[in-house]
Image (cartoon, rainbow, N blue to C red):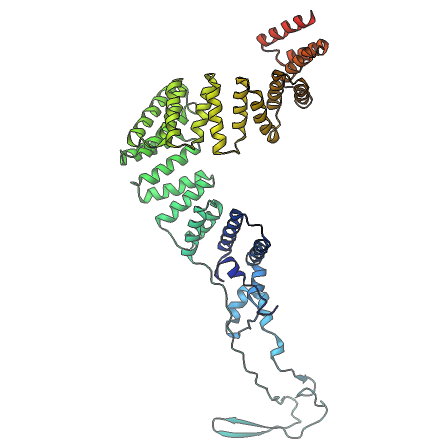
Length: 503
């Protein structure tokens, strides 16, 4: 490949020649994300993507990158030892014998001759004239002196001037900046690697431990995050932000008592910190059931409620504070207050999915199915990928008697998750709509693939009865009874149907 044909992989990825592999990978990911977001499927875009992938494969493979960087470089004796230590395989390329004059030596005769002159011709007197330090010296050598070997003329070959460019290892600051950038993009594991390198190379300041602690937290390594936050607190025990971070990490591993202690310390340091009150309220609430109920349950619910109310008083525009207080009201079965809080949360944040969900479930429990369907519809608008929202909206439509709408939602769920519960519910929708053919197909699928699911046997029994085949209907009811044998009420209802249909 000529110089004009050689592709500049560094320019393609937009990186410097000495860029380390981590940053090359980061540049590659950014470019690929850019192309994906643009959605350009033109031949030019595809060719560009292919070039980017080719550059990435070469520059992240140490041997291929070495081969790519080496064309045109000549070995330099001055850098030989250091260069050999790092690149022994490349060394032989530069130390080519083609740069040196060839000669032959006749070992047994005590003479040496230039290549191409007969070895058996004796020269009586060899005269070598050496010019040295302003004078000429003539030496006469005895050709019969076997122990002396006449030196051959040496052809001086100029040593080429060599410049060998080697990648300079990134310094500590480069690793630190790379780690920060990777953390900001959500590449937690890669960020940890870079920040560890920065620390190993001598960076030992507050920021590096904050960033590494956050990367550990994002990567789910909460114990290591706690260790870094604790290291920081040993240096600066009056940092509310670090104390709050450690408190959240403690809660992640179920250490609610330690989490609450950190939250309380942060509040003592800054009594107007609404986030600290919210954190402590959440940790009180999460601890309910995780600790001894006789000691903590009622007390922690009250403490959580107080903290959320304090947080709302300090920042009444924060939707999550109302949502959190709504959870406590729901726990106390104060449903109207809970709905009020969830409503305030979605007013402040119209895309607050969790608040819609909690309010939708409350409406379902209160048999306000239309309101429930509207909440789950809103969730689908915000994020169409939440499959459970289609189920709950479909279930609400079913209970409202809107069978076509219910079936449409259940179809979406079945395309992604064909469970007995969903298949059976769609069967009941078809049954209640009067489409017995489709109903029996759904119930058949359930009884074949999920024979332990009781409702499918009951549903098919009802279809057989409507079709006038009470023998099959009663047989299915007997199987249904065997599945619900421990529920006396359901067994009694099924026995009554058998009596009615049998007569």
